[in-house]
Length: 149
Image (cartoon, rainbow, N blue to C red; front, side):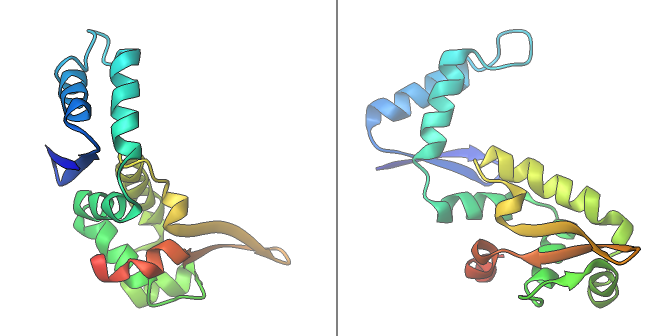
């Protein structure tokens, strides 16, 4: 097993030296002038990221998110059964109007690690009669890895 440090706290574990060489070549030639990866480079990067363990992916997400996102996730684990966004905002000190932006930033970092924000945070609109509210909760994956935050 070989671990390649990519920067910004990201790393990829490769199973063989040939995989490392393929990854380096893919990263070296990752731009085709249009801001997208060539298909062969994208496949090599995807294959390399799939070899990462879930713990490595979680660590990469936690290392890549900003302080506001860490604060939101840290506060959210205090509500294992979930919480209404207004109550969560009051308890965490995070303005409820900023949840979307923070969750968006977590989503962007998670996507780079082949995870989804939905694998970490439950966020859904709920209705109680005519009253509509946002419900937030930590997922099992977040709760299992809360000590890594």
